[in-house]
Image (tube, rainbow, N blue to C red):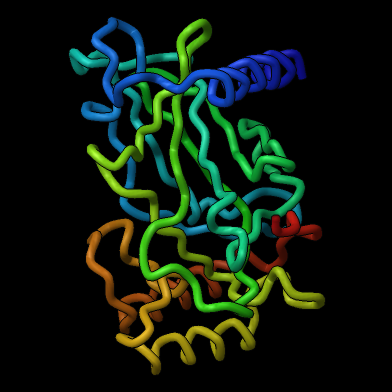
Length: 242
């Protein structure tokens, strides 16, 4: 509880810096300060549900934070900003992973970088499938240490925003949370309209391949998550948009 309170204070401080003064460059030439050029961010992530007690481990992904010299930055506040995604992608509230802190009003999920600068995330969320999702990335990733303006790790120079997939394709709708046959039906709808339009929410192997395609391998991943039974529920509340 004490560690989580300290993290909450730290992330509120770094978020204030984000509003009051962004870094002049994506890679400040200062030791121990996050640098977009040398940090590692996945090109895509997949949001999951839970089994009612813990977040589905199949949703694990990492961000590695490094400074301009490539040295790992430990203890940095790292967060995903999902506000640009919220017309279709919604975050679950609460997040069950105790290592994460969610700022609901800002549509942000925060974690702290550990040894090697590695920051671990398992984020719960779902799609509404009421709107055509982005044909690319929508989530922005930031990192900050106390006393220094936050650095966007997904700045236009280093890499684009992160693409977001969701196995629970109707969880943000009433009665929809948790994987079921209705989500499979929605995935098939996204599959049969590919490539026009391309719906990033259904492309589950993009984080590994960084190639936009909705195909059999994505169906295989959806089935793996479904039969592993780690996302049988979700939410129960989803953050509204905006």
